[in-house]
Amino acid sequence: MTLVEDATLGVHILAGFAALFAGFGAIATKKGGRRHRRAGRVYVAGMTVVAVTSLVLFALAPTRGRTFLALVAVFSYYFVFSGDRVLSRKRPTDRPELVDWVAVGLLATAGVGLLAMGALRFLAGDSFATVMLVFGAAGAGFGVRDLAAFRRERAESREWFFEHIGRMGGGYIATVTAFSSVNFDFLPTVAAWLWPTVVGTPLVFLAIRKYKRGSPGAAASTAD
Image (cartoon, rainbow, N blue to C red; front, side, top):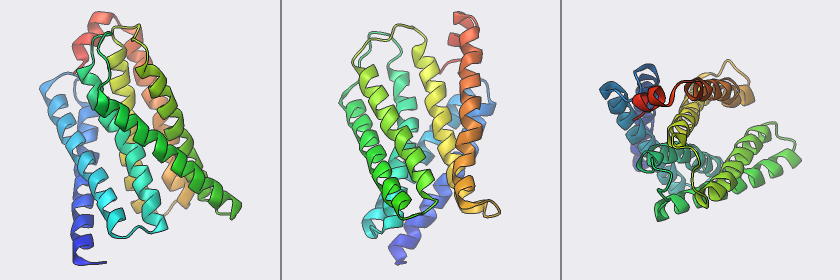
C-alpha cells in the first residue's frame, strides 16, 4: 500500500476502536444522561470517520474486496446516521429532509450491490456469498421500508425513540462485526462476520420491547 493508504487505514482503525468503546459506553449508561449523550456523539463521530475512510480506501484502489467493504460501510453507517437523524424528527409531523432521502437511496443502492455481488459469488461456489446476501437483503429491505415510512406520518409519538434504539443498535452490531471479522480468526470466516447479527438483533428487539412495555413518561425520560 502507498503512504496515503497506510495513513488512511491507520485513521480508520483508530476511529473503529473509538467507536467500539464509545458505543458500548452509550449502551451501558443511562439513556438521556450526559454520559450517554457524550458517548453517543463520540460513537457517531467515530463511525463517520470509519465510513469516510472506507470510501477513501476504495477510491484509492477499487479492488473487489474494497468494493465489498465500501458497500458494507454505506450499509453500516446508514443505521448510525439515521439513528442520529431521527432525534431531529421527534414530533409525528416532522418530515424527512433531502439528506434523509439521499441517505436511504444510498442504502438501497448498497443493498442491491451487495445482493449482486453475493449472487455472483454464490454461483462461483464461494461460501462468503452468504455474508454478502445477508447484508444485501438487509440493506435493500431497510431501504424499501424507510422509503415507505418517509411517505407517512408516524402514528406513535414515541416512535422516534424506538427507532433511535433500533438503528443505533444496528449500527453497533456493524461495529462489532468489523472488529470480529478482523480479529476473530479462530472462527470460520462466515461465522466471524455473521455472529454479531445473530446475537445482537434479538437483543435490540428485546430492548425495544422493554421500553414499549414501560410507561410513556418513563420511556420519554430516558430518551436523548
